Length: 355
Image (cartoon, rainbow, N blue to C red):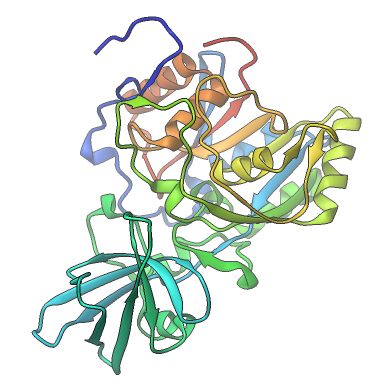
């Protein structure tokens, strides 16, 4: 469908056809052997990902999201023998979490479920949010996940968790103290320790943490996007020294490079107009970045290829220019690049002109 030239934003304008064989079902043997598509005003170039170090200058600042994915998917059995799947989206406290479920009767408050190791009592608590259930578990959530949980690999992989996912659906710089994400910040998966060490020797590198939750993969329901639409809340933390590093980078004429859309969302959400820099400390965001958004912090973005009609694709189009990015996707498909979480990556300059 072709929409009239106005300020309305339509989900269907971000649709593209992707051959099934271009969905990367498994990671490559070596992280940095994936491909890198450089996007610069409808000029495209394909290299190996390890060449990313040549795209970063010594004056720049590369910012990483050091969150860690936890084994958030639980496969359980009811007394009747029926199967139940619980995906823990957000831990509210030691025993309670917001969850997506399959096979669970949400009308029964108290339920007993079974695992290979022990029975598990749960209580469904009232919540105003219809997207998920609030569940209280009889045992600490972290302990349950460590004992019986599996990595929450994306459903479009159309396979069960494999032992390779335990290592590879996790960045090499994931921080154990930030084990709160239900999806990997997938642009991070291309970095091995050798490549990261080389970049650290060449330029400035810093970190923040955004806990990847439902907001990152929440489906968009309506075709016409409400101008005031938001995403589900995600929590993030910015250390004090990052604000100083951003000031220093701007002062020396360097560029702020966000590794992944999660890093970009945290940085842009923390921007303080009066200080022209970012707030530090624990924060949360529900920001929905789309056409017309004015980027304040980030100059370059490293990201994977995202699903059609997704909020992440809209974010990337807002950053790099809609026609530019959609043409880049066509170019990537034509050249058989690999898509989604275990797929290839792109590096994009911020678009300064209107789409």
